[in-house]
Image 1 (cartoon, helix red, strand yellow):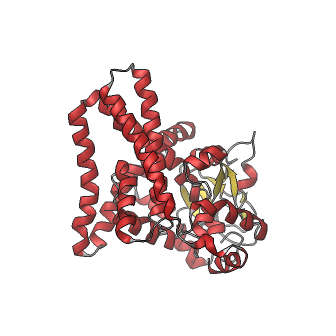
Image 2 (cartoon, rainbow, N blue to C red):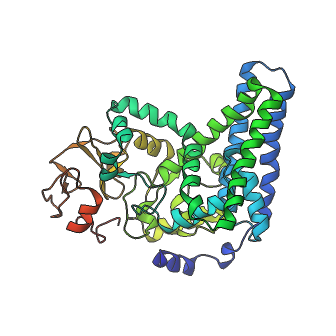
Image 3 (cartoon, one colour):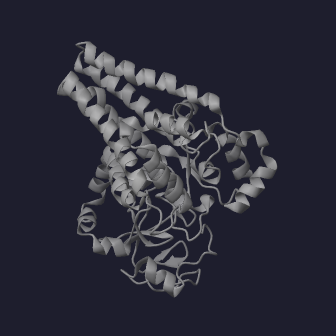
Length: 391
């Protein structure tokens, strides 16, 4: 990380590292669209098709607010603590996530330990965890095409459910005096949305909040799952190895505050997203062989059609079918071209990007652990090589 930032700061203008306080004005149109849509659903007796269209608009406003709140809470807009927290609370109000929880979960833990097994709260499962979790074992008994559809549908609730898990995980670790504030920052939004439903009635509330929340969850999670879940687990925080940027139409980048530029964000978390395209150009110039990028739709398709269990840091596995899949930097990008199957799984015992799937050296000469040995055994036996490409 230090090598990247030092190199880039030599070529980037100094002024881009200052906050962009005028961007706080983005709150006005985003909140106005969301409120206007909710009022329209509540006040007018519209056909259900019109209500659904309004719900989609409200949902996109919620999603944009959430993505803007992510930028605000990194300090790239304003750095005055009370104003930063107030703006962040407003932005994340639809998701019932408070700024204190978000900064601990996302800014400290996720950014500090990206794709580090056991430390990153957003990293996915290992083989040890699979064997210890009956519910996860049940999921992988589902036929892969059905599991792919369910994964896509799960994006509509994933962020909300994960945020509740993060509240349960980090609340006991916070200073005692902060806990009431963290709980209040969760309960107040929940109470406001319940009160809204009691006032307008369940039928209107579905279109004013529930459907928009599903849309916002899906939009935000369609980025989050592609940010890192196709990448290797890494023993050091290397954004060019453990992060993926995706490409979307320019108007989508405007609406979503350049959240597609995720590798750039991990290199400079507190840099305004306004300058992410500039950082991208330099990353691709300086490290063309390490930088990972693909169309958003293709990355999302790969997330849905590959398993989320790490057989080792550089390979994913379907534990039930014993099929091994490469990750970014280790062969996945070559299997992600149009017209090809998402993963082209390799049966146990065959090579995956120069390595045998189980216990025998491939062309690289490295060994991987036998089935079920998992990350811990790999680290002990030297199977996790920080010097290999992408780590």
